[in-house]
Length: 229
Ligand SMILES: [Zn+2]
Ligand SMILES: [Zn+2]
Image (cartoon, rainbow, N blue to C red; front, side, top):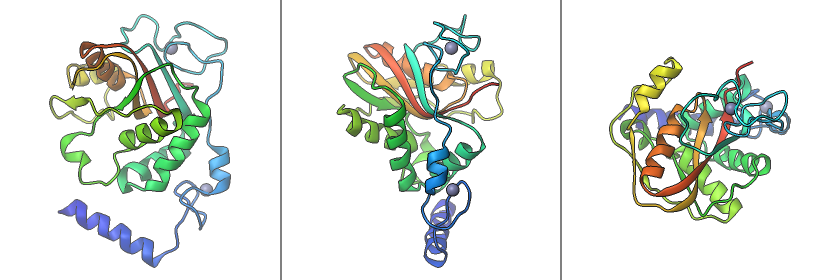
């Protein structure tokens, strides 16, 4: 009920006030041309496994070495800096569809298409999901499925509600998401999509469920990625 009221407030605000860039507040597009150009796209050299930017090409980096990771590779389009945080925040909280289109376009432009037969996404959390029109990971998967000519399969389910990952340490995050997903039957190589890669705990747990469901290998693609400097 409260969520519906919030959605109406946004509709009214959009009618009363001209649109502004969610990053810099310039009037006009949902994300202005200058901010679109300035999105911090991630480029090589990257860690071959987890996609962290590194000084020279490595098979495993400081961030992922020695960790058990259920996905084969992870790649992201842009660094999760303050500007991108504002963009993703608006996308999640307000369900702005233009942002899904933009995220899909930038991800297809930056991330090379993994060799795969299907694409899926991290499913929404029961109560946090349905009240908003656009579930960003599903939307991004649809955009990438179109760009890469791959079928989107909604095969992942949550087995239980999760504590919010925000504010948890890496180990706490891993414990929080362990066994949190179940996958319907799948086979062959697939792509798993999420909006933001923070520590990789969520996508690793989801990839683990996909492999238990029959996937031979899972490549992760996200719109943004936290980068430790
Ligand atoms: Zn802007
Ligand atoms: Zn790495």
